[in-house]
Amino acid sequence: MSQRITLLGATGSIGLQTLDVIALHPERYQVFALAAFTRWQALAELCLRHRPRYAVLRDPQAAAALRNHLAAIGSDTEVLEGERALEEVSESPETDVVVAGIVGAAGVRPTLAAVRAGKRVLLANKEALVVTGALFMQAVNDHGAELIPLDSEHNAIFQCLPQEGRSRQGVRRLLLTASGGPFRGYSAEALARVTVEQALKHPNWDMGPKISVDSATLMNKGLELIEASWLFSMDESQIDIVVHPQSVVHSMVEYEDGSVLAQMGTPDMRTPIACGLSWPQRIASGATSLDFLTLSALQFEAANLSLFPCLRLAREALRAGGSAGAVLNAANEIAVQAFLDGQLAFNGIPSCVEATLTHLPATGFTSLDEIMSVDEEARAYARQQVTSRGAQY
Image 1 (tube, rainbow, N blue to C red):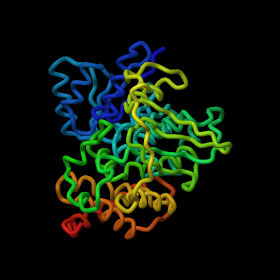
Image 2: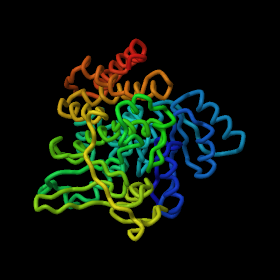
Image 3: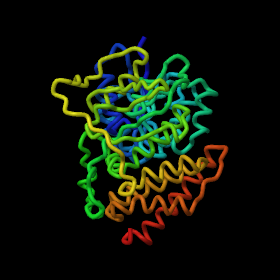
Image 4: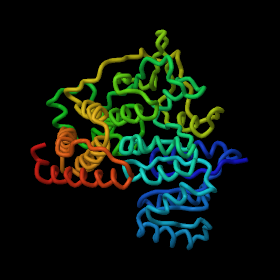
């Protein structure tokens, strides 16, 4: 019996690669719903190819355009709109698996809706955990959801940890690998002159603009540090980050006896996606095999925290707990967009984030509405920083 898939963020990098894997196994998977924000033309093409029952666009105008287009060509896909519609397809009893691929805090509510409906959730939206933390994991436990990470690093750790009961007994530490991004080895002077075009050219991975910039600042690794702590119930002090430029070793788990288990493969997101879709079975992903005979030497080095302070800020936010993760993420989203829009220098991104964290110290929260209110407050302050001090940054 085929599994019905709801794909949040269908037009993004994760969404398109998920659809590539699904297309290899039509007997196993059926697309139930495809969701995006505003890119209705791209979503229209995917609807024609994969024939979902529902297409969802968060933006009402984009939804209207898609609805008219699909009606004109005789498609039977029903178009829904708005944030609530994203939650509805995520929690629908007709959905078996939800792929959470929406970038940023915009993906928090539909991802949490899927969790509360007890779905298998393939988590590529790390912000859901960074923002909501304990609230999210409590919902996973309370509603019996099955959470499988799709980030290559977290999926690697997932595969390397003991599977029986997901026990952490005997685990000494987790090692998250980082490629170092496009600016590994740059001087402070060179980083000050970085352009948007340079930041979007990741040496190993094919990603969207926001994640590419996060990789360039190493904030992506900082967000993954916070995500790993919640996903695997590990203290911040038990998670280390090592720069590994080749992106062949995706992450490692070190055990008390000195054993280190690593998951390796070519840098292709279809591998963790296939793992998440089929676990505990294995299916073809379309990724090429790792050729050990032509593999170059594997390098590992420490991250330079003075040149890439986003890693330090993320670790400090994890230590602070409470709302700090939401503030960190919100300020970073605003700062990254300002950089992409030419309103902020590359080095201004961590400066804006640090100023926002200082302005809004960590507090506790007990509900999603409460933490999303903090998210909005942090965004407002970060926007003020960009407006008033963007040139100085």
